[in-house]
Image (tube, rainbow, N blue to C red; front, side, top):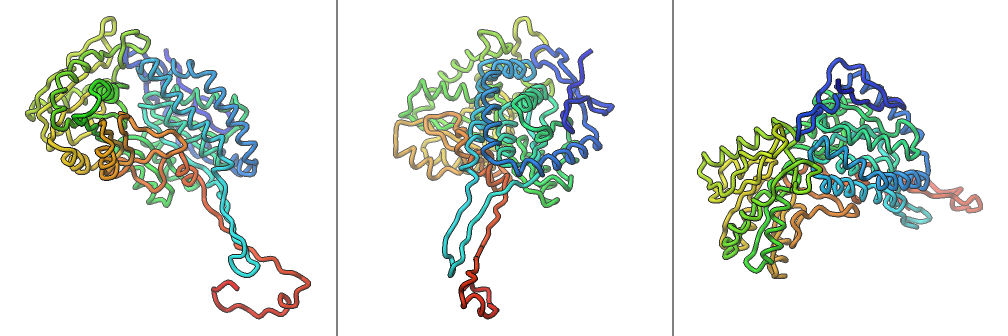
Length: 501
């Protein structure tokens, strides 16, 4: 019988008192790995109270001391990268190389958190009025919450809590119930790094637990990554409760291929970005836009996609792994059938994909559609699987207009040898992250992850300088010190205006 995963509240890893749990299975075999508890409301209340108490002490710890602990943590993450990636691969199905890459992208944010003293510097101005100075501080908010998705169980939590905690906050992490083992490992290593207890709390569960956290009066800020529908719920509920909220949600990313592009690089970029991680990325390119003569490369793209076959996480020939669940697989297969029904041409069909020795895996093979109408469900909806649409247009301007008509704006890319085309594209396209001959333009953590339109709800984006602003408040001080030997100071009359003098 599989064990029930621990939660971390009130200074210790412990079993939840809940009566119900969610099974966590290996998506390649359906083997039961653990059960994720549905944390009780009483336990969430205790977690928030413990985090609040820890925050009152943690906010007084000098930034330099917080950094030393964070430096130990990021070093420990590097030392245990393979261990984390192995757990991640087993519960998500990701191939090992992809899992290691995910862990590393999270480590990069933990490294950035080690720069927090300079990132939290305020501003100062002398003599804003006679003998009056003004200066500002960035101060932590209090208890912050992170709600993270199944597709990046290491990277997304590491986008959130290292920066929030480095800023002086306490944090409560509620990871996806579909793959919670990796976040548990991250928290275990966090405390192994020497952080005081209760700075981060870890609870498991689903919608009820999310709602309990969002509506708790002591929670000051919520960070969320997930689907559009859930993100809208989190944003509306959180802002209705007057919380600070950032929600990174869905996408329908386009990659534009110009006729002068490097053909091999463009096709390679399309394959990796479309079916890597089984297409379960918010930055996956699910629409290839071939401009002019480049449409002749669609057949080559089909052949390259066909060679990218899925398999187990530790298989040498595996290009990517299974879908996270049977439900996810069925949803993707439904879209493939819908595309055929709506009249799209299926050049490559992954519906009947199977993997030797893994008959129970949630496999979907690479799938390629052409003859796309923008009203089709496969075009309008985020499929979140290894399904690529090939659209043909006559000009770069048409490609830009196609992208700008999308309700999403997470990211987009162009492959071209023309600086002029690249300049026009990056200037006119309505998306938050733009790649030029880069298929997945996720910025390194000294920049912020800047989705637009229905891909993001909030004002300050994830990681980078914007995250520091999200996890802090600015306090501005205006000061004047009187000179006791000054006759003017002792005889000054009341200032009845708002003008400084």
